[in-house]
Length: 216
Image (cartoon, rainbow, N blue to C red):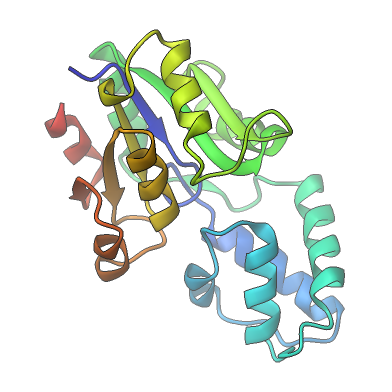
């Protein structure tokens, strides 16, 4: 039935929390703010870099947002130098992806990360041959939850959107899949807890990567 599996990057394929926390904390420190615990960054992800930085600077004591622009600039520059620092694939995801490929599914990544950064992270973690398409943020594609990019991916593989699975760990991912008419699968190994994810009403919620195979 299903021909394509589309994955979010952060929190679904890759554990980027430590990388995000390390980089943002270094930037906060440069502007005179106090770094915050890594675990706190779970609540800051999912809405893009600018929103993350805004939430982090506020949590670090800048209530009025005076340092947001400066921290955002520093953060972007640091990630441009090395966007794979402390990034690792989630346990079991490699094996699950390989099984999906062996079952004949095409694999794609759809992320709000910049295109060049998304490609760099994916190829660093999974090599150049695991995914058939990597679509990041660019002038060509709108950001999630706009479904245009997800629908475009389906067309590239000559299939209908209801033949696609959209896998993610945030409400934005769920909205994207739903807006595109895809089966939406929320994962609990990422940045969101069950209560927040369930509120987005995915079609399925799973706790381990290998449970995705059972949905086929």
